[in-house]
Length: 277
Image (cartoon, rainbow, N blue to C red; front, side, top):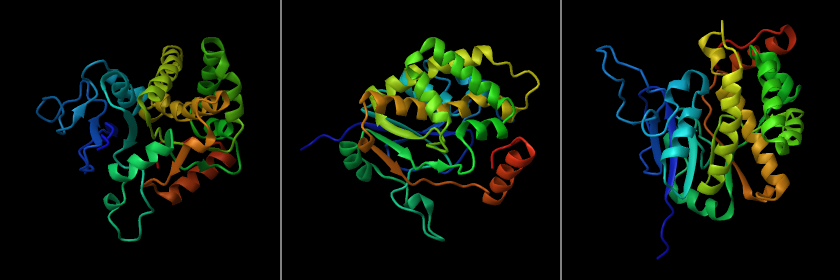
């Protein structure tokens, strides 16, 4: 009988929340370092924590869910590794009205055949329609333009083979967002090695003085875009063929009215986002 692959999909969370029960999902408390409860004891949700082993938990204020990605990269031994969020999961199908979302979350039984056919599982692209990735990020986030320009400078210096992919992607109007993916360990290692080379340099050089907590989490947001740059590069080199990328539906609990208003205000009146929607 064929042995099942060892699959671990990190569920990044900063709060107590309902979790999938399948063993392919591993809830991980992010930003655990230094967090305490009302009694002054280490904050504990009963999940694994990102401040164990080799970790960057103390940088969660800037890296966001990417402290979970780093933890998985350095501490997990699995055939396939993925990242989702406590509010966002890959779905086997769209959730019907009044249906429990957790009944639609991708299961191991559904995932295994996909992994035999595809090298990377990603969320369906988000389209921005009226502006490019670069202009959208620059319009909506404080320091956004400076962050992307600095990331480009770092890539040109440290990994110049990615520079054309960065420039090409920034001109596009759609992207795989939310730092969600599932891939085999070899590709996962390749991605993380490149990503954190760029992010650590960005973290060292970008000044967050005077920024609020939302704006200071820029490294996590920049990494959403850099994943697309890395993926484009893999297709350019032939390491991953376009037909080997599977786009999946995903849960998205957002206030669409606020999202649209925020998008329009940023585009027309240059009002920056101040929170996630």
